[in-house]
Image (cartoon, rainbow, N blue to C red):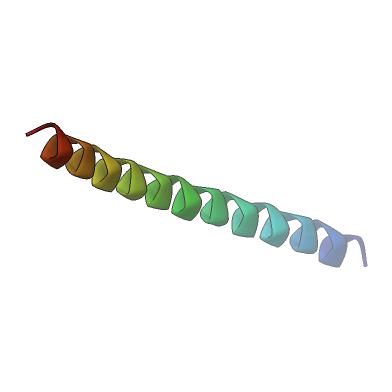
Length: 43
């Protein structure tokens, strides 16, 4: 029973970590897109 609880916690941590990386990558992509739009507007 204890092993199942530990496994559940580890799976939850790994899922949250993977989610954070995905959100962080999406944020960087959106930032780059905004920079390109801003550069085009300045020209």
